[in-house]
Length: 105
Image (cartoon, rainbow, N blue to C red; front, top):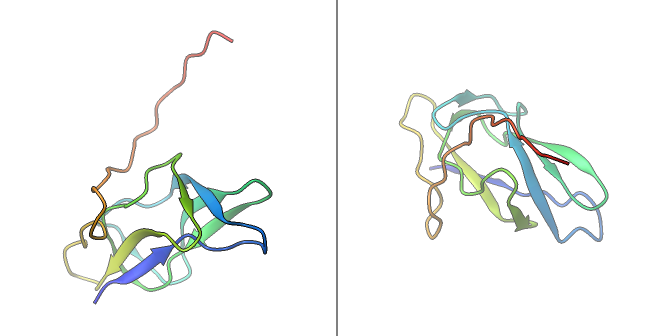
């Protein structure tokens, strides 16, 4: 059975947060407590840690996407197994690669 990675509530008034960056990729083995993503809200930036050890599944939330507190970000499956798919009802999203931004401002 897969373990859900959820958007944490970092303060009493926090209702949503933005997934800033994924630190691990789908298919990576993760260890409980390991930092797997960064999030931010209007008042705080924080890290999301793996709630269990196993294989990180496809993300349900892309970098830069804002989601409600408690939303499922990804799933962690059993170690040695294929990565779990994105949570049902969500389109699987690929972890983006780094892109350089060229702005004229």
